[in-house]
Every structure is written in structure tokens, then in C-alpha cells.
Length: 401
Image (tube, rainbow, N blue to C red; front, side, top):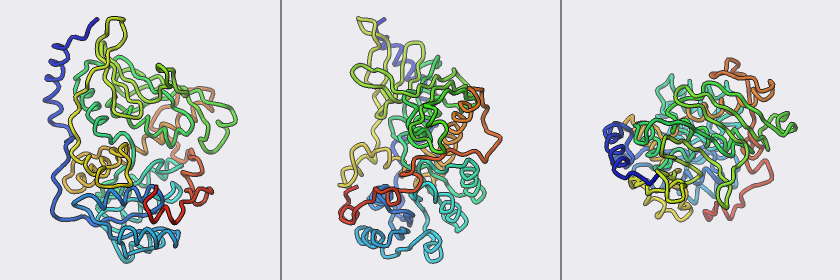
């Protein structure tokens, strides 16, 4: 069947009213008033965050907390920040910023997020995975909720503008009723990189994972405390819409291997594979799916990538995540990636392991036992310095990330 262009246009126009009420994709005009920003943990990823905050017109870096004294001094000089501290507690005694980016290893995120929330910071963001123990993730979310603090979720592809727009179109019904969903390549580190899959799936589905039945291996990886090398096949029952099939390994896709999220309706497939989502609609003469031009709207803050030499062109979702976070603090707009998103992804990952360990028994979410935990790989849990992958002082000084 050839693509029915008239049908596609009518579907898109019909959905436009729904899109109009959803979060802006163009960004909010910045205020002349600058938000004061503190970076807590200024290793490689913390420096990426610092570069973006330095480039935005309505934020300024005022404080850095970094436990490594040599890097603390070098990075402070690089960014022109004089308020330098060993840790978050020392920082908050002297400087309470408007915004705080907690980019420590996962082991130390809970303390820093809660300390910032209790000190009166207006917005706190962190990164993946936010914790190992589900109760610790709960404590961070609750501390921010209780004090009205905006809790952002950091550097995930869910914040890519094109992924946000594809999700908005799906939820507005632009492509019809979803008939199926699949996750590919959900393995290796399901609490770390797996956060990406679950966060995009939840956005595309407009739903939560409410039950998991999982098969995981190899056996030695399933017995470990961390998720290194753990591959998961599963069936996710969603709170609405079709079930989602999960494949632990990547799948053949032409000459490559497919990893990401698929959602399909009667004649449309939306496919995210670690880049802008592809849209297939109708078929070509051979009966294969036809790739169409999605016509995504431009992201007005993409220019930041051209202004910051240390950023890669693929870091648009980091810029978008931070821009969304700043706008949410200032205007109350919706976060493109939140701390709640990170908690949900961790909970799904834990449920997968629990189901596999119980002989593939279905596990309902939310989990009743909040003491359950799944540790990320050591480089995420403890950081590069503690796992023999430190950043050199030359790299920290020169912006080579």
C-alpha cells in the first residue's frame, strides 16, 4: 500500500489542537534576571553541564563543589568560579544557589539532592542512575516535592526535542491508535543505559509500566549486586494501550543492530534508535515500510552547541534538558526529563531482576518493598577517579571531556 499523504496530513492537522496545549518545543524567552547555578561534582559530565550553564543567557555559574582538590582548582579557573568547595555541605553553608546540578557518582546523589532541597535551592537536577536502592530514590523525590523544589532528571535522550515532539504526536493521536510496542537492546546495564529505554517508552506510550514478567541472564550476571552484563527479555504490561515486548539483545536491522523503542499503529511506525525518531508510514512498491520526512519543528536553543567548543553535535538533548529545567523553575512549565522519570526507570529495572529471580513470575508496580536495590556498574556508582579512569588535569583544564 502506498502512503496516503492526504490521510497523513489530515491526521496531523487533527492532532495539532492537542499539540498546542503541550509543553513548548521552541523554548521560553529567557529572563534578563540570571539564575545562580552551583555544580556539585565537576568531573567529566559535571563539566558538560557547566559548559551549557555558562553559555545560556539567563544563568551564571557561582559555585562548584568537587572533592578532588586539584581538579577543583583547575576547573574553577577554567570557568572563572571563585567559590570552590570540597562538598555540597561546605558549599551550602556559604552559597545557596538558585539552581543546583548534582553530577556526582550515583552513591552520593541522595545526600546532595536532599541537602540542596532543604537549603532552599529552587531547582535541583541530577543524572542517571539516581540511586541503587529504591527507597533512596523515593527520599529524593519526596524531599523536593515537600518543599516545592523542581526536580530535574539530567542528561537523557528523552529530552531530545524531536523525541519530545514524536511523543506529543503519538499522545495526541496523530498516528492513530497504537497497536504494539517493543524495546530492543535492554541489556548490559539496565539501571544506567536502560534508563534511556524506559524513559522514552513511557513518553511514547503516555503510560506507566504496571506489571513486569522477565527472563534475564546470564546466570552469573543475575546473581550479581550490580547490573553489569545483565540482559533482560520481558513483557511489560502498560497502564493503557498494548503490552510492550522487551528484547535484551540488539536486533538485526539491515546491516546494523537495532537498539531503542518502537511504537506502531495500523500503518505508522515511530522508531527511536539513539537519534531523532524515524517515522515510517505506508509502504513502498516492494511492500516495505516507507520512511517519511517527520517535519520536526526546529529547536531554538540548538545554537548553544555552536557556541561551546567542548560540546558535541549530539549533545542537543543535554542542552534541551537543561533549558527545560531552567524554564520549569522560572515558569512552572513541564520538565522534559524529571527526577520522577529516573525513579520510574530504576523501579522498572529492579522489577525486571526480581521477576527473573522468582522464576519469571509477574511483578506488579509500584513495588511494595522499597528496600529493593540494583547497583549500577562501578564507574557509575563510584565515579572514574575511584575506578581507575580519572580525568587528567590537562583535560580538565582544556575542556577535553
